[in-house]
Image (cartoon, rainbow, N blue to C red):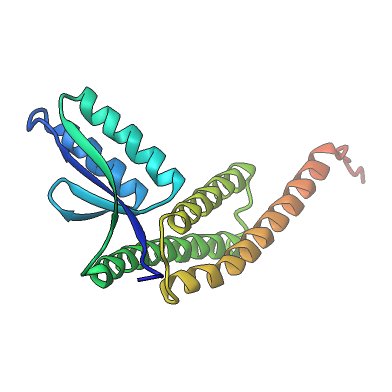
Length: 191
């Protein structure tokens, strides 16, 4: 198996109470993109970043009063199912991100149509766009991806940037016009 994927496996036990400890470990593994093979056994494709994250998580689990082991592994059988589960999880994340991008674009189109170009609105849009970009970067970093939803996510990126740029340009033009209007000296016409 020359092209077999190398895996990192985390096996752990955590005290049953308080439940927030289990939830915290689950959230951290989910954020890393780990897949559960069974209860308290999760895997990630091997990388220095994943190893560092799992070692830190292992230390935290031990500090919680639990136990944990981080192992290197290679699937002897069933790897297609694990890879398939990873790809499905990434596709679901991309699909969710695309939905958020569509909502964001719809909001920009509505604001453009209504000429709602306040500075606060532009700032909010910049923040929302930055969050979407960060989310995309996190998904890309999580592991193997096949052609599918991920490609559609990349393809939608230019549309988001183009519409955001148009909104920003319109907003800046309106802000400049408002500033010019405020600087005008009032003139009264006398009959």
